[in-house]
Image 1 (tube, rainbow, N blue to C red):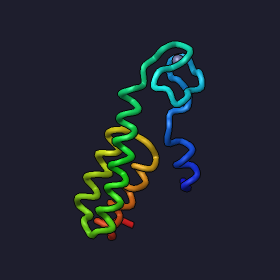
Image 2: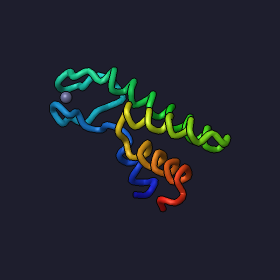
Image 3: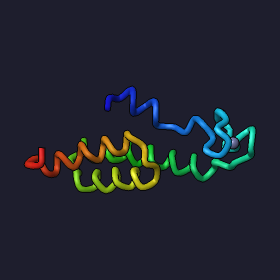
Image 4: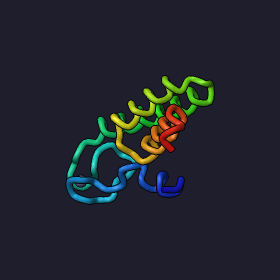
Amino acid sequence: MNIDTVNATSTTDRCPTCRARLSLSPVCGRCGTDFVMTRHAQAQAKQQVTHAIRQLLCGQPLQAAASARAAWLLDCQPLAHVVSRMIDRRLSPSNE
Ligand SMILES: [Zn+2]
């Protein structure tokens, strides 16, 4: 998986209810499905991934692993998974 794949799949672009293309609005324009909580969780997940990377760069791998896992739990997006695996490899270099 490369970074383009991660970016291309990091947002919900179709309504899971009616398959309409979603705009920036938190409510589907076709069926009215509300994505406020989903978008909030996605935003929190992005913050957690950013936090994990900062913690890793600051020499806090255990905290970074916890942040990456929190991001994965909030929104199962590929970027959180990639960052979590990268941190796990750093914590357990013998598993490579
Ligand atoms: Zn819809």
